[in-house]
Image 1 (spheres, helix red, strand yellow):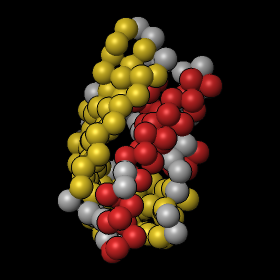
Image 2 (cartoon, helix red, strand yellow; image 1 turned 180 degrees about the horizontal axis):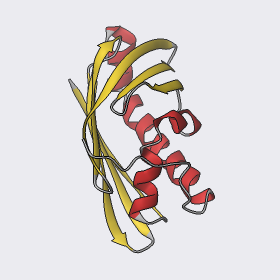
Image 3 (tube, one colour; image 1 turned 60 degrees about the vertical axis):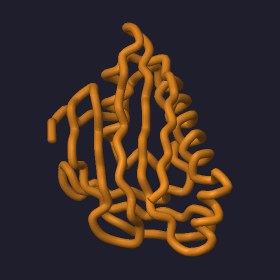
Image 4 (spheres, one colour; image 1 turned 90 degrees about the vertical axis):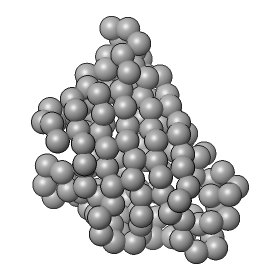
Length: 150
């Protein structure tokens, strides 16, 4: 298993950052290589990705969700193995630190080499920067929210 830990500070309140992160179907708008996410239940999502020429489909389940604090997940079916957590830290009334920690299992030579060369870390860094731009350009207005707990 490989690990990635990255963070970004966003100029929006913690509630706005958290609410936007719960809108999984919008991830393709800021996550490079994510083609589509379908929200199948409150806790189950189906992902279609193509990263570095490798196409994958898999299901992920939210294993823990605490409003304005954290969202944790793990894959449960399909062609990818990963688990992670995103946490939200209030810096002040208008700023939030978003931290992502992810464990993943690269498959095959291409993914293993890409991981060793830091491709995954750079991808996650870029995704978080694009999330920052996405939510800040909206003036902190999330496209929706799911406030339930898991």
